[in-house]
Amino acid sequence: MGVRSYFIFFLGAVLFLSSCSTKKKVLSSKTHSSNGSVLTDASSARGKTFSGFKLDNYADLLNVSTKKLNPHLYSFIDDWMGIPHRMGGQTKSGVDCSGFVNLLYIEVYKGNLPRTSRDMEGIVKRKKVDKLEEGDLVFFSFGRNGIDHVGVYLHNNKFVHVSTRKGVIISDLSDSWYAKTFVDAGSPNI
Image (cartoon, rainbow, N blue to C red):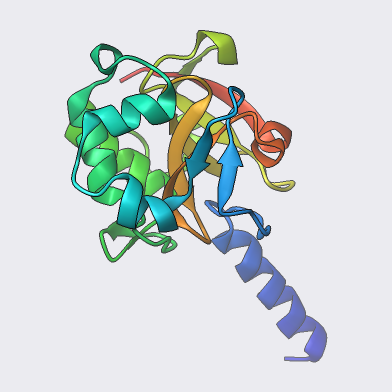
């Protein structure tokens, strides 16, 4: 094999493995929500913000009443917060975005979804962002390969997903990176 063949093989492997990745980007450790409150990332949330599961912490983060939250969902999220990204993973030693969403749906909603983010997008009833409800799926494209990332919508533009750099985290759809790469959203038909 020549140098060109190795390059083509390497490029193909990279494209194949990026089906559930996020673009490497330096993110600040704190983000501000639209109302000015500070959202902590997984590194600080793991140690401080969500130390011991408390639904009130999530209600504060999402700016909603605890009555609007599904305790089973947030207990699941709390248990996985900060778990690192691992391509193809579905365990607490590492998980990818679609693996996490699959496990969440099995545990919280007792439903099975397709394994890949692209296939998940094919089974949703589409919704506009302002109509999203807790548990809906949000999809992103970071390149030319169509859908390659998925997360679960929570409330007030926040969603939980798996970042390649930070693991399981809660992010905001209005952050410039996610606003730019957002493609679709909806409720899965399961």
